[in-house]
Image (cartoon, rainbow, N blue to C red):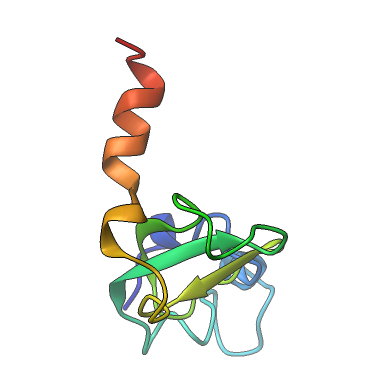
Length: 96
């Protein structure tokens, strides 16, 4: 089962609030979902641009407006052009 914390920001996180579903207080997709490495890209980003994709750890069912998640990189994307999410967060908080 996917944790509530991992569901934060998902379009369907609404269903994780008590009283918002008929069958309990969890999104129906959280029960069978798994945490996995996915590749995130904005809907208006050119996919062939280096750095267009960001590697993230998200649930298999996670969806967010304005963003597309791929379970594997498209063939034309070089692994070296992908931004590692942990590295991106570290450099954003420590600009040196």
